Length: 260
Image 1 (cartoon, helix red, strand yellow):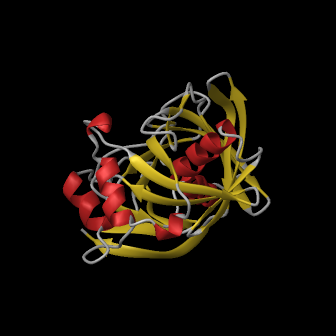
Image 2 (cartoon, helix red, strand yellow; image 1 turned 30 degrees about the vertical axis):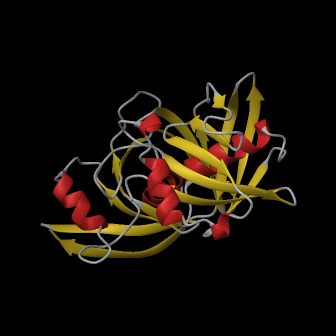
């Protein structure tokens, strides 16, 4: 079959977007892996299906696949999904949608896309020494505070931490952080991709929460990734956080057709 798709990115985090509102996409691990493969497919950090709404009061469902065909919530993917859906619906200004972890709201803020995230029940401090925190916000994130993220051997330290026994059986994403001049700098080793990504939306939110809990930043928190800078709105609430919102740019890269 011929498959029509669009390629989008949010601060370098790139995704294949497919209009699957009629439910015709032939979902299989093999097809997802092939399409996401950067040598034999389109190439991306994930594949997103825009599907018919599954819950009253929502406009669409976002089904997200990592390149290894596993499922998780994806912050930047959600922002790209809304922008893609908006283009299919007369440039709609906002929408409520569902993802694997529940209901989210999205909207255009001028040229930026903002999405809400579910409340975080706990920002777990000092999980592996004094410089390591952990946040679960739809995806698991280990937050490692270092002197310089740029000097981290991320393809060595990332897999070691991602697969540590404490994170079994599913593993975790690993974010290496520092704060400078009120901005949090971040690099990410992303599970499911099994490599460094240019950006990670849920990682950016987790990094902002860790920085707020440590007194390293003030909301809204600017988080700089290799692919660009995003902003996080948040309100600390006891051990957790609420009123979470991720804001940043998105862009369509190209559209195409592939035979599968």
